[in-house]
Image (tube, rainbow, N blue to C red; front, side, top):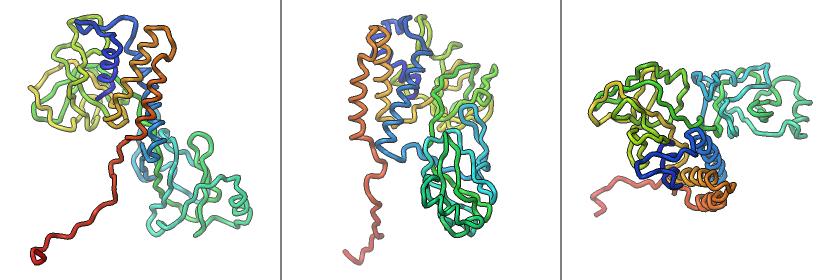
Length: 330
């Protein structure tokens, strides 16, 4: 379920959709998306409390540059030198979990998270006559995303960091038109869709209209095409340029030419819990309609607690190793 489907289903659940599928005027798409963003962040915070590794990302100082929410980041900026003790970490960082050296011959160099005001660290710095060699490299996070080392290493080191990352903002985007080829994963945009310039981040799903009007979530025009909360839409594998993208699977329907479309973010929560985001947005719609702040939010909080007990673990047991069948034992 993508965010457009979440918002549309919330409108249905809040009884804000008319028989002709148009929506009441008291709620706007901007409001819905803002509420969804808030609910999404609440869900992710709760999921991280239940599963500490939820949203874990591994990044090497040798990896390529990337952009996140308008910020360009070069991972080489946290490659360790023999002179620096301060480094800037990725813009999507929430919590740094681990540092590991990946420079050949130095993979056993130990890193340990430690408050740099700790007496052990202070004494280590005071007694050190130079850079650390085979000793532990103590590190700490200062401020939002600044990595501080107690002492620089004795050699430059490329490192790998494991951290909990923030997902991109939830987006809805429909500028321009798209064309597809049946049984192909390629999609071509026209009329300056500017997908790269506008920094659309994965995961996304593509919804294509049968007309020149993009699929609507909120509209008072009955002739508009509306997002279907129960439909299957095409997941996007990559945004390749401002005018080309690749789908995860072949586009099976009949080819379309210069049709309106909607690209919608997919929430970064397990599919089995995306309905909770629907509940949150529904509660906010009802709050605005009734004028009673947070009337349905206590129910949402109860549902969050229930989610903790059934959050799926993708591997529920240790691997079981089985020997090949040997007929002589029959």
